[in-house]
Length: 149
Ligand code: HEC
Image 1 (cartoon, rainbow, N blue to C red):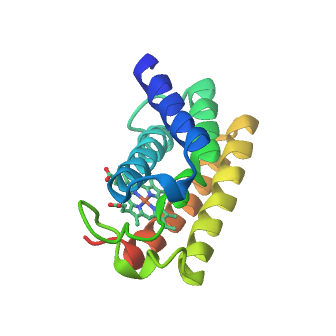
Image 2 (image 1 turned 90 degrees about the vertical axis):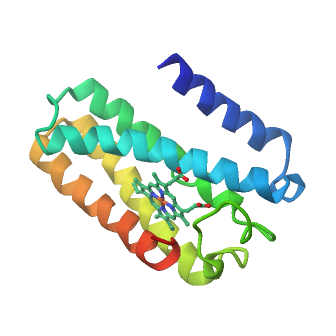
C-alpha cells in the first residue's frame, strides 16, 4: 500500500514538474506504462471481487474504483511525438498526438471509469459487476486496436 501511494505520488510529481513536451520519449513511455499498470492493478482487484475470486469488500472496491477514475486520463498524457519507438507495445497509429479514434477510445474508458467509482460507492454487487464488465469492454476495445499482443 505504501509503495503504491509512493508510486502514485511519484507520477503526480512528474506530471506537475515537467510538461509532457519536456519529457524524454523513453520516460513518457515508462510513465504511461506505469499508469496503465496501476489502473490494471486496481481493476484486477475489482474484477476478482465481482467474479468471486476474492471476498467482496465495499471499502476496498471503492478505493480501487476511485483510483481507476483518478488515473483514467493519466496514461494518455504520455503518447506524444517520438513515443512510437522504443520499449513499447503501443501501435504507431495511436501515437500521432492522440489520433481522433484513440482519443475517443480513451474518453469512453474515462466515462466508464467515472461510473465505476460511482457504482462502487453505492455498494450493490450486481451493479458493480455490470459496470466492471462495461469498463472492461473499453479496455479491450482500445487494446485490440492500439496495443500489440
Ligand atoms: C484508449 C486506449 C486504452 C485504454 C482505454 C486502456 N488501455 Fe491499457 N494500454 C493501452 C496501450 C496503448 C498500452 C501499451 C502502452 C505501451 O506499451 O507503451 C496499454 C498497456 C496496458 C497495460 C500494460 C502496462 C505495462 O507496460 O506493464 C496494462 C496492464 C493495461 N494497459 C491495462 C488496462 C486496463 C485494465 C484498462 C481498462 C480498465 C486499460 N488498460 C485501458 C491503451 C489503452
